[in-house]
Image (cartoon, rainbow, N blue to C red; front, side, top):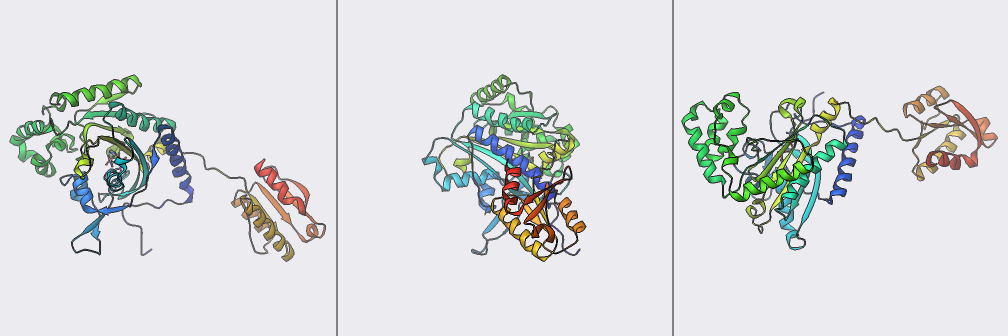
Length: 423
Ligand code: HAM
């Protein structure tokens, strides 16, 4: 075949759409209980939003953005959204939501785009479910979003997940910590991987979660963030941990959890499912108290997370938790002869009008061939119409599960089926 889907994208055909619907239904139920309302923002935005929002030195911005000319102004580009937090904040500001409510709780689902090397669990177009809480610095909001993610995973039945939490500090305590990290890594600069060499002065905290074995070894003994937090960050982190412990969350504190987006302050967290290997993060998030201001809005503390739906599906598959396909009770009309075809056509449309799933072959094929179609559509009830039945003003109703049959007056077929399907 000449033209294929772009690398790192996937087609989701009807056989798997039930799995997506299943997760989406669980998400909607969860969001309703936690009081989150849905937003939908454009899948592309002004490139500047991500440069300022996510941070110019991040991998996402430096290597992974799909940018293209707007076609309006020279040199102005749009970018396919690599994530939705920056867009949510843009929408929050542009629609002046901060002036209308003191606390905003939004959720979203949709495709995101990152130009990375595709592998199992890492796609160039992937789908996230995410939540954003804007307008509170309460540690309970951090705990709430973590609990929300965990409730979703437990609702889906997922086991063997690990929860890692950290505090990445704030603009008060981070500069001094950065300096200490630079001082620590500078003498080893030449031994760091190429990426970390360029991170050293721009974003040295990222060296701490580099996946390269050599960088991991070099960072042993590096200054720890927890010993360098300001009082406010340290207290906030203690309170978040107290709440998580009170909610019986089995978490680990990972001082090296830095996350790949620059907007985080204080809490950062990830939920991992180790069997997914290098793409084990199924959800991640944290607090971003400076992002709204960074995008020219009023000071608005905020916290949120996003999960990768494909990765959750992979985890469900590995644990044998994908739902059984749902088969709606349906009706198939087998019509033998031209008059029967016309009568069948009328019955099918009358049933569909009442939102009962009904179909027929629509061509005058043999009984055997039409029944084959009925089986293929998993029909529960088959109405058989032949010339003899029509002449008597009757139809045969066949129950496919038991192969039992009964004769029903034509005029009563619709009512009979309706009562069987709708009860
Ligand atoms: P993130 O950690 O970049 O955070 O992405 C969140 C989740 O999206 C990851 O844990 C992973 O499950 C999934 N994901 C990311 N990249 C890919 C990919 N290439 N293929 C498949 N799945 C992927 C954010 O995006 C933040 N906006 C989360 C957030 C919301 N923080 C605060 N509010």
